Structures are given as structure tokens and as C-alpha cells.
Length: 551
Image (cartoon, helix red, strand yellow):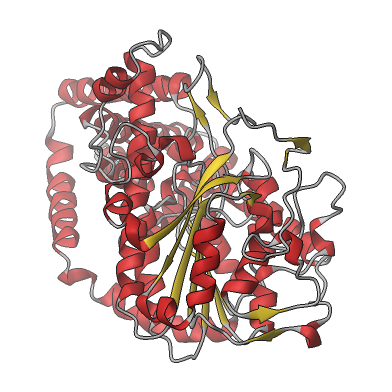
């Protein structure tokens, strides 16, 4: 048979190497888009070629024993199928085999498949019009002709060198990388993605079973004073790193330039140092007190605003369930439109997007033909790793800048100062996102509001050699923008906002403020928790169940 032909193993080698390159197409794309440098790109390609060589070698050796040969081909066929799927979905949709892809497939029903297939077929048929397709085809054809003609010593020397570099690269990844090790193996990545999605589905089903309908729905009334109410929830952004609040480096130039048009609150405190603990309190009537019960005992913000007559959106660049957000997928599930634009899981790093991905979705929501809109944007903000939160070329603040403003912080060496600079640049990037949102709302003829705050702060070498969650660093930026139409139509509310901007409050009570800003009423609404109400009562603020004591 053809298997005895000495040229066949090299062609087999080429096929497996090509499949291996396809299996890491999204990884190389991620490195290139994040300006990782030539070494990781070359390393991941060499490691892929090494994998292809190993599989081809295994197939060649397994010919001597039929059961092993069949098993080897099953593995090889699965490897090829997954690799081709990975490169196809990456080129067509921007992401390869991942938790996100599997979650999309899980949530797609038969009707959506029928609607989706014509577009998919059209995209596949249009592939020959893509220059990348022809480059790959010509390169493969050339290699198919050239590879058998390469002298054996050069062939084995070149593949050996590539293998050594690939193994060295993966050894470096295994020893230094905090994430992404399994991404390099398409079989392992696919298996882990299936396991993760199955776990997420189970979690979502369990949590969904705890949800309750909106109680006292008949008591929900609203004048809908803001036709567009945009709630922007940031991530891990400390108030103390915003130049709007006095930070020495220019982290919020856009907000600072329009400060006269903003209501800037100076003493807003998060109820926890963790997103997973904050979101249930932000998105429901659950307060910050340790004996406040369970999240599912309270009405959620999307269901409340639906009862007020708003069309509701939840647009997120964070995960649906998992380590970071945990309950966001459940708390937002009552919204009319729910979209997760980035990763759907905290380990799905290759699909993380910059927060600007939310802006087109916001503009689309604002242009929707409906009278009143409640739109919640959940940013990735300043989540660690900070360098991944803003595009290449947007990092204006340097380690030298940081060291120059903190000469007495002896623990700030160049490495730590670089991390602080990256954190500051993530806040600078968020500043640009907020500026775009404000510009969009300023052009609206109908009354429009933006409420922005971060879910919690973070200690980034601020008072000692420490980086991470810290109960002392839970003061967050809290900013409200009202466009001209809202200001002119609601002078009393604007006066109340200006009078309250020095009040000390917890972001766990933001839902009460939003009730007033929208001109609404609801049985569970409490004037004592609303800083815009004359009956507001200053209470002990709790952080992670402990009383917060300001410095």
C-alpha cells in the first residue's frame, strides 16, 4: 500500500504540522494583537510544529500494530478536526475553540441554527476571496512539492531545532505564565472548555432555581424622568488613582476637562473587596449589612426597571459565572437584552476584549425604537492583569512617572512602579470609554443620565509592598452625568445631587438613588437609604461584613 512509500511520512508530517498551526491560530493572533513581541509568537509556532511532528511520528511507528494504528488515527483525526474548526471560527468570528464558543453553541436553538446557516455557508464560500486563504493554499502546495526533496540530514536537523525551541518555549510558559498553558494543546483545551461550560450550566440552573418573581410588582410606578438611564459598573478602580480626585498623574483627563458638567461624589464605598460579593448588592435591594440575608430574597435591578416600563439591557465585558463575577449572569438574566461581548469565563483569556467593544452595542441600544431604556454596562476596567486592559499604544503613564511622584515609597522599585503605571493606564483607558458614553448622551434630545462607579477599589502598592484586595482601599469613583434635557427638566433632582455629593454612602444603596433619578416609586424603596432624599440617614457602612472605618 501507499504507506510503504518513503515520501508518505513527510507528507503526513506536513499535514499534521499544518493542523498544529491551525490549532494555535487564535493564540498567535492574541499575541500579535497585544504586541507580545517576536519570541512568544515564534515560540508558539515552534511548539505547534513540534506537536505536529510528534503526532506524525506516532502514526508512523504505530503502523506495526493494528490496534495502536487505529487508535493513533482516531486521535489524529480528532486533532485535525478540532484544529480546522479552531482556525475557521477564529478567522470567521474572532475566537477559536473556547468556553465562549461552546456556550454560544449550547444557547443556540434550532431556529437560530436555521437562521445562522445561510450566513455561515456564505462566509465559507467567500473564503477564496480572502488573501490569507490564497497565501495558505500556495504555501501548502509549495511545501507539498518541496518537503520530499529536502535532504534527510537537513530535514531532521531543521525539525529537531524547531522541536527544541518549541519545547523550550513551552517550558518557559509552564514555569512563568499564570494562565494559558492548556491553550497550547487543542485536545486538552477542548476538554477543559467542555468541563467548564458544563459546570457553568449547572451553576446557572441551580442559581436560577432560587430566583423569585418581582414582589409587589403592582407598586412599581415611574415617570421615567430619564428616557436613557445608563449604569456603568467599573472594575477594581480605586478612587485614589483618579486625577479627578487629586491623584498627581493624569489618569482622568477627559473627566477632569468636563468636571463642571459632572456630579462627583467623594465618599462612596464598596460593600466588599470582591466583585462576586458586590454585584448582588449593587444589582438588588440587598444592603451592605452582614445580616442582610441572601441575594435571592431581594428584587433585582433589571426586573425592577422592567416593571417601571423601561426596556432593559445588560451589556458585559466580564464573565457570566465564575471566579470574578459569579452571580452576574443570574442577576442580569431578567433584562430584555443580555449580551456578553468578551470572555464568558475568567479562564477564557484568549477571548478577553477591551471595553470599547461595548460602545457599538450601547449606541445600538440607544437607537432602538423604544421610549425608555435602562442600559447597564459592566466593564472589565482595571481588573488584573492591568496591562491587558488597554490597547497597545494607549499606555501614556510610565514607571518613571510613578516613581517621580512617590519618592518616599522605598518599596516601589522599577518593576512595581511599572505595575502601578499599568494600573493607572487602565484607569486612563476607562476615562476614554466614559468620555465616549457622555458624548453620545450629550447628543440625545431626550433626558439622559449616566451613573458610573467601580465595583471596588484595589491596593496597588499604595501604602506598603502589597498588591490586591484591601478593605482600606474600597473608596471608589462615583460620577453622574446628566445631559442638558435632563438638567433643564429636573432642576430639583439636580440640586439634590449637588447637595449630596459629599455624603458618605455605600454603593450597595445605589438602587435607591436610581429610583429617585428615574422619578419612580416602589414599595421596598427606602428614603433612609437614598442620599438624594431629605430622610437619608447616615449609617455604618460595612465592607466584607466588618464596619468601615475611614482613615
